[in-house]
Image (tube, rainbow, N blue to C red; front, side, top):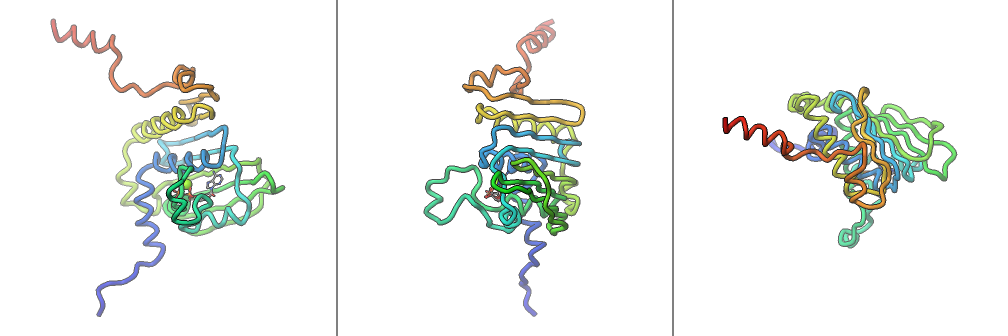
Length: 235
Ligand SMILES: Nc1ncnc2c1ncn2[C@@H]1O[C@H](COP(=O)(O)OP(=O)(O)OP(=O)(O)O)[C@@H](O)[C@H]1O
Ligand SMILES: [Mg+2]
């Protein structure tokens, strides 16, 4: 009997998901990049329990038409690349057409989106990679992706997630990096009890760095603390 067999698509998708989604911050990264590629001016990230219970990214970008919203969950479905030649002149952050289907394979995902040109929006729900519900909905233009219970159907991966504080730290530092790279956009990061980042559009990178509501993660202890520690050592 042959030893080799082709894996069922659902299993292959879960394995592929491990390459795109390692932890909640990887989901935030993919959804932030999609929002930036969609030309969003304001991007709001809401997380609960370090992103393990919920990650919601709300953007005011160009949104998706009904048919595109469904197509976006097919593997290798992208609006950002047409031919191999385009690979040499990519101007977007994403291009593989992998992120949404892989995130949907390992979570309960709700996509709510409306293209400005359409009167009605679309709400699509996935659970563990299976399409659960599609319906029209009255929505503002733009896109909201809610990713709940990451890895609920891949317990082996869920076990490797770190504490809520550590996972939230990864998310906060990721949002910080994207906010620095895109000073003209507003970035907001909240938990149910805290607004961690809220930086309105800035003209220059320097303005962003000094904005209230925006703190660069500190790489080392502050000079005062380190000098007092040094003094203690000398005593
Ligand atoms: N927030 C969004 N606003 C508008 N369109 C979106 C948004 N997110 C996804 N899309 C559409 O869905 C498509 C699929 O998204 P997905 O992230 O899976 O792939 P991608 O961004 O093309 O490539 P990659 O896998 O490298 O991220 C995108 O090409 C884009 O057309
Ligand atoms: Mg993408």
